[in-house]
Amino acid sequence: MAFGEDFLGDRHAVLMQARDVLRTRVIAVAPNAQVGIEDRAALFVWLPAGTHDQVDRVKRAAESAGRLELLEVAGPAEHAAYYASESVPEGYDVLKCWDAVAPEHGITDRLLVAKFPIVREADFTSVTAEGDSRGWMLVCRLNPEAAKRFDDAAARAFAMSPRGLIAIIKDGHVQSVPQVSSERFGGELEITGGFDETTAKGLAAILRSGRLPFPLKLAAERVVDRSLPK
Image (cartoon, rainbow, N blue to C red; front, top):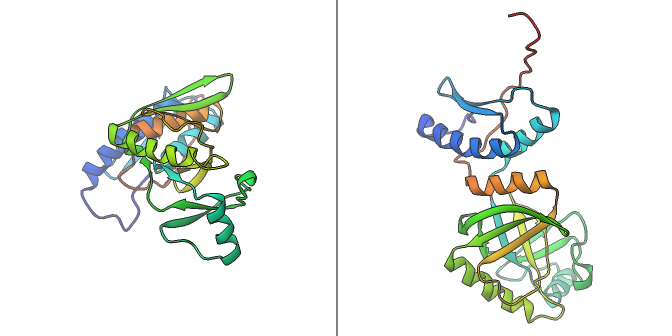
Protein backbone atom coordinates (compact mmCIF):
# COMPACT_ATOMS: atom_id res chain seq x y z
CA MET A 1 0.00 0.00 0.00
CA ALA A 2 1.80 3.07 -1.25
CA PHE A 3 1.49 6.78 -1.91
CA GLY A 4 -0.14 8.14 -5.02
CA GLU A 5 2.19 10.00 -7.38
CA ASP A 6 0.61 13.36 -6.52
CA PHE A 7 1.33 13.14 -2.75
CA LEU A 8 3.33 16.04 -1.28
CA GLY A 9 4.70 16.35 2.23
CA ASP A 10 6.80 14.51 4.80
CA ARG A 11 6.24 10.94 3.72
CA HIS A 12 7.94 9.26 6.67
CA ALA A 13 6.00 11.19 9.31
CA VAL A 14 2.72 10.61 7.50
CA LEU A 15 3.57 6.92 6.98
CA MET A 16 4.09 6.51 10.73
CA GLN A 17 0.70 8.08 11.41
CA ALA A 18 -0.97 5.92 8.75
CA ARG A 19 0.76 2.80 10.12
CA ASP A 20 -0.69 3.39 13.58
CA VAL A 21 -4.20 3.98 12.19
CA LEU A 22 -3.99 0.92 9.93
CA ARG A 23 -2.62 -1.29 12.72
CA THR A 24 -5.62 -0.49 14.94
CA ARG A 25 -8.00 -1.39 12.13
CA VAL A 26 -6.23 -4.53 10.96
CA ILE A 27 -5.72 -6.10 14.39
CA ALA A 28 -9.49 -5.86 14.99
CA VAL A 29 -10.23 -8.13 12.02
CA ALA A 30 -7.01 -10.20 11.95
CA PRO A 31 -5.36 -10.33 15.41
CA ASN A 32 -2.26 -12.15 14.16
CA ALA A 33 -1.47 -9.58 11.46
CA GLN A 34 1.58 -7.32 11.47
CA VAL A 35 1.70 -3.81 10.01
CA GLY A 36 4.90 -1.93 9.23
CA ILE A 37 6.76 0.48 6.96
CA GLU A 38 8.77 -0.79 4.01
CA ASP A 39 11.68 1.15 2.47
CA ARG A 40 10.37 4.40 4.02
CA ALA A 41 7.92 4.60 1.12
CA ALA A 42 5.05 2.17 1.71
CA LEU A 43 3.09 0.25 4.30
CA PHE A 44 2.92 -3.53 4.43
CA VAL A 45 0.50 -5.91 6.11
CA TRP A 46 1.75 -9.43 6.82
CA LEU A 47 -1.06 -11.89 7.50
CA PRO A 48 0.42 -15.27 8.48
CA ALA A 49 -1.90 -18.18 7.70
CA GLY A 50 -4.59 -15.70 6.69
CA THR A 51 -7.83 -16.90 5.12
CA HIS A 52 -9.35 -15.34 2.01
CA ASP A 53 -12.03 -13.81 4.23
CA GLN A 54 -9.42 -12.21 6.50
CA VAL A 55 -7.55 -10.83 3.50
CA ASP A 56 -10.74 -9.26 2.14
CA ARG A 57 -11.54 -7.73 5.54
CA VAL A 58 -8.03 -6.30 5.86
CA LYS A 59 -8.33 -4.73 2.40
CA ARG A 60 -11.67 -3.15 3.31
CA ALA A 61 -10.22 -1.80 6.56
CA ALA A 62 -7.30 -0.27 4.68
CA GLU A 63 -9.41 1.26 1.94
CA SER A 64 -11.97 2.90 4.23
CA ALA A 65 -11.52 6.65 4.67
CA GLY A 66 -12.93 6.33 8.20
CA ARG A 67 -15.59 8.99 7.66
CA LEU A 68 -18.94 8.68 9.40
CA GLU A 69 -21.56 11.41 9.33
CA LEU A 70 -25.08 11.67 10.72
CA LEU A 71 -27.32 13.99 8.71
CA GLU A 72 -30.84 15.30 9.15
CA VAL A 73 -33.23 14.06 6.47
CA ALA A 74 -35.80 16.43 4.97
CA GLY A 75 -39.46 15.71 5.66
CA PRO A 76 -42.09 14.24 3.31
CA ALA A 77 -43.26 17.67 2.07
CA GLU A 78 -39.73 18.72 1.07
CA HIS A 79 -39.17 15.42 -0.71
CA ALA A 80 -42.47 15.67 -2.58
CA ALA A 81 -41.62 19.20 -3.75
CA TYR A 82 -38.15 18.09 -4.83
CA TYR A 83 -39.43 15.08 -6.79
CA ALA A 84 -41.99 17.30 -8.56
CA SER A 85 -39.63 20.16 -9.44
CA GLU A 86 -36.17 18.48 -9.47
CA SER A 87 -35.01 21.63 -7.65
CA VAL A 88 -32.86 20.99 -4.58
CA PRO A 89 -33.88 23.24 -1.67
CA GLU A 90 -31.28 25.59 -0.24
CA GLY A 91 -29.28 23.99 2.56
CA TYR A 92 -29.76 20.43 1.30
CA ASP A 93 -27.88 17.88 -0.79
CA VAL A 94 -29.17 14.83 -2.66
CA LEU A 95 -27.77 11.36 -1.96
CA LYS A 96 -28.40 8.44 -4.27
CA CYS A 97 -29.47 5.19 -2.61
CA TRP A 98 -29.76 1.69 -4.03
CA ASP A 99 -33.37 1.24 -2.97
CA ALA A 100 -36.32 3.24 -1.71
CA VAL A 101 -35.12 4.02 1.79
CA ALA A 102 -38.40 5.14 3.40
CA PRO A 103 -41.47 4.53 1.20
CA GLU A 104 -43.78 5.30 4.14
CA HIS A 105 -42.33 8.84 4.08
CA GLY A 106 -42.73 9.10 0.32
CA ILE A 107 -38.95 8.87 -0.10
CA THR A 108 -37.56 6.92 -3.05
CA ASP A 109 -33.94 6.25 -3.99
CA ARG A 110 -33.02 9.95 -3.85
CA LEU A 111 -32.57 11.27 -0.36
CA LEU A 112 -32.61 14.95 0.64
CA VAL A 113 -30.20 15.55 3.53
CA ALA A 114 -28.92 18.66 5.28
CA LYS A 115 -25.58 19.92 3.95
CA PHE A 116 -23.95 20.08 7.36
CA PRO A 117 -23.63 16.95 9.54
CA ILE A 118 -25.08 16.83 13.03
CA VAL A 119 -22.33 14.42 14.07
CA ARG A 120 -18.97 13.40 12.58
CA GLU A 121 -16.69 10.55 13.60
CA ALA A 122 -14.45 12.99 15.49
CA ASP A 123 -17.39 13.71 17.83
CA PHE A 124 -17.37 10.15 19.24
CA THR A 125 -15.65 9.68 22.58
CA SER A 126 -16.10 5.90 22.44
CA VAL A 127 -17.34 3.34 19.91
CA THR A 128 -18.02 -0.33 20.65
CA ALA A 129 -19.67 -3.14 18.71
CA GLU A 130 -22.43 -4.90 20.63
CA GLY A 131 -24.91 -7.63 19.73
CA ASP A 132 -28.28 -8.61 21.16
CA SER A 133 -31.55 -10.15 19.95
CA ARG A 134 -31.93 -7.27 17.47
CA GLY A 135 -28.58 -7.99 15.85
CA TRP A 136 -25.22 -6.22 15.87
CA MET A 137 -24.86 -2.46 16.23
CA LEU A 138 -22.42 0.29 17.14
CA VAL A 139 -22.87 1.89 20.54
CA CYS A 140 -21.36 5.38 20.49
CA ARG A 141 -20.85 8.09 23.09
CA LEU A 142 -20.76 11.71 21.94
CA ASN A 143 -18.90 14.70 23.30
CA PRO A 144 -21.16 17.30 25.00
CA GLU A 145 -21.39 19.66 22.02
CA ALA A 146 -22.32 16.89 19.60
CA ALA A 147 -24.75 15.38 22.11
CA LYS A 148 -26.64 18.69 22.26
CA ARG A 149 -26.69 19.02 18.44
CA PHE A 150 -28.04 15.52 18.10
CA ASP A 151 -30.73 16.01 20.75
CA ASP A 152 -31.83 19.24 19.04
CA ALA A 153 -32.11 17.40 15.70
CA ALA A 154 -33.85 14.44 17.35
CA ALA A 155 -36.45 16.74 18.91
CA ARG A 156 -37.22 18.25 15.49
CA ALA A 157 -37.47 14.81 13.88
CA PHE A 158 -39.57 13.36 16.70
CA ALA A 159 -42.11 16.18 16.29
CA MET A 160 -42.69 15.26 12.62
CA SER A 161 -45.55 13.05 11.46
CA PRO A 162 -44.49 10.41 10.60
CA ARG A 163 -41.40 10.52 12.82
CA GLY A 164 -38.38 12.01 11.08
CA LEU A 165 -35.26 10.25 9.87
CA ILE A 166 -31.50 10.50 10.38
CA ALA A 167 -29.18 9.38 7.59
CA ILE A 168 -26.01 7.49 8.58
CA ILE A 169 -23.34 8.05 5.93
CA LYS A 170 -20.13 6.02 5.80
CA ASP A 171 -17.39 7.18 3.44
CA GLY A 172 -19.94 9.11 1.39
CA HIS A 173 -22.42 6.22 1.03
CA VAL A 174 -25.76 5.76 2.75
CA GLN A 175 -25.36 3.07 5.42
CA SER A 176 -28.87 3.24 6.86
CA VAL A 177 -31.71 5.72 7.43
CA PRO A 178 -33.30 4.94 10.80
CA GLN A 179 -36.40 6.63 12.16
CA VAL A 180 -35.89 8.73 15.28
CA SER A 181 -37.40 6.90 18.25
CA SER A 182 -36.95 9.53 20.98
CA GLU A 183 -36.60 13.28 21.33
CA ARG A 184 -33.59 12.93 23.63
CA PHE A 185 -30.64 10.52 23.61
CA GLY A 186 -28.31 12.03 26.20
CA GLY A 187 -25.17 11.54 24.15
CA GLU A 188 -25.46 7.77 23.59
CA LEU A 189 -26.42 6.42 20.17
CA GLU A 190 -27.06 2.96 18.78
CA ILE A 191 -26.18 2.84 15.08
CA THR A 192 -27.68 -0.01 13.09
CA GLY A 193 -27.17 -0.98 9.48
CA GLY A 194 -27.74 -4.69 9.00
CA PHE A 195 -24.32 -5.47 10.51
CA ASP A 196 -23.05 -8.93 11.29
CA GLU A 197 -20.51 -9.38 14.10
CA THR A 198 -17.44 -9.08 11.88
CA THR A 199 -18.67 -5.97 10.08
CA ALA A 200 -19.72 -4.23 13.30
CA LYS A 201 -16.39 -4.91 15.01
CA GLY A 202 -14.44 -3.87 11.93
CA LEU A 203 -16.38 -0.59 11.59
CA ALA A 204 -15.97 0.15 15.30
CA ALA A 205 -12.21 -0.30 14.93
CA ILE A 206 -12.15 2.01 11.90
CA LEU A 207 -13.99 4.74 13.79
CA ARG A 208 -11.78 4.37 16.87
CA SER A 209 -8.65 4.58 14.73
CA GLY A 210 -9.61 7.89 13.10
CA ARG A 211 -9.16 8.97 9.50
CA LEU A 212 -6.17 7.95 7.47
CA PRO A 213 -3.90 10.90 6.61
CA PHE A 214 -4.03 9.94 2.92
CA PRO A 215 -5.94 7.40 0.78
CA LEU A 216 -4.29 4.00 0.53
CA LYS A 217 -4.06 1.94 -2.63
CA LEU A 218 -2.92 -1.65 -2.96
CA ALA A 219 0.47 -1.67 -4.68
CA ALA A 220 1.18 -5.43 -4.58
CA GLU A 221 -0.11 -8.65 -3.08
CA ARG A 222 2.01 -11.74 -2.50
CA VAL A 223 1.19 -15.22 -1.23
CA VAL A 224 4.03 -17.09 0.49
CA ASP A 225 3.86 -20.89 0.72
CA ARG A 226 5.90 -21.78 3.82
CA SER A 227 5.90 -25.45 2.84
CA LEU A 228 8.37 -24.66 0.04
CA PRO A 229 12.12 -24.95 0.75
CA LYS A 230 13.93 -21.65 1.31
